[in-house]
Amino acid sequence: MSTTKATDLIRKGISALNEGSALLAMIHFEDALKLEDSPTARSYLAFCLAKEQHQVGRAASLCLSAMQEEPHKSLHYLNLGRIYLLAGEKTRAIKTFRKGMKLERNRQIIEELKKLGLRQPPVMKTLHRDNPLNKCLGILFHKLGMR
Image (cartoon, rainbow, N blue to C red; front, side, top):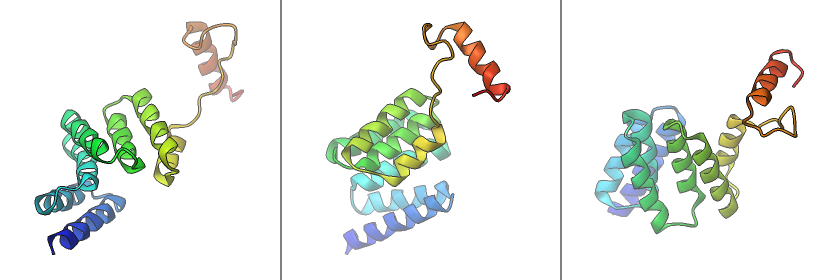
């Protein structure tokens, strides 16, 4: 009985999250975890904690524990990547999203990667991407509409 109720709470939490109510979703995931310890509920709760309460460290460790239990689920990589984005760690987020995509094709990960966009090649290919000249020329060309 508690398993079906926990599953129902997880479903409600996902629905609330999709509607943009992370606070309500967090309540549902916490209630689901009280009934049954589920890696899926932990992973979603971790994302909600990072989004609503800015508890990035706790959120990342919760999500990593869910990943240890179910390393084959791309959902956990999606949530961990989102947590990294909220923490301002874009490079780590992209690496995490890509690891999740290697496991299975996940529509939400694809959407997150599309939001982040693709990098243009450096203007001067002989110089490193981080070279100040490349950065300045890239910004200038972008503003002029040449890229």
